[in-house]
Length: 280
Image 1 (cartoon, rainbow, N blue to C red):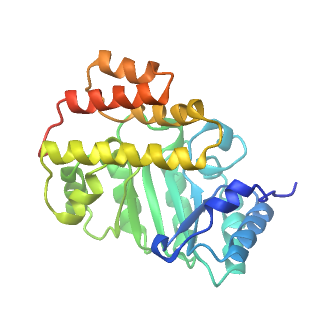
Image 2: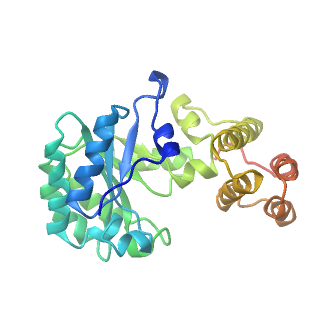
């Protein structure tokens, strides 16, 4: 099978300006040949500074094809896949992974091989893939991996507050940093709090949340061609994360909105009528 990267909107999204750099592109594959083709195409665009190889996605559609976390139980396949990076000395590569698919020992077994690769860093989500995003992150599994990893290591998983970041970096002081995923969707002010070193007030958080939401609507509106319904479909998924303690009546109005104007009014009411706690 070939790889088709000719979708015009995909190519448009990959165009960058200097202010948007550095830029990393994440690739999924369980097949070395397809990984090589994808990396070759990305390299030809001269648009990105790094390729991140995803070995952490737990979604069944990916896992069944030995992609994402689904490749972790197969060390020979992992090695064949990652050895393709030696074909591209001009590109920095990184890997995002989980502790394993079925067992946290899977990542530990791969670690001596990973330590020997010219990777810029590893990012570890300390759950196994079968958990998806349920249950607690495995800090003991993280500790074992952390103790044996010689590459720069980033942490990912269940970071929701500034206190979470400080607790993690206090226990694991040699971490190179943390990656914010769902936590940044639920608390769009979190990265700014961390960089400033100060907790924001409830009103500051409210203002940043409203600005973040408005910017996201603006960007979706400029890129999506399917009209209001497509924009609404994209925006409503955000509320799986945002303000989980909001009143059900207000949340229902947001999710039931069928016109963009009604949706934006419902969101404004929800944000400004919901208690947002300062100092968390």
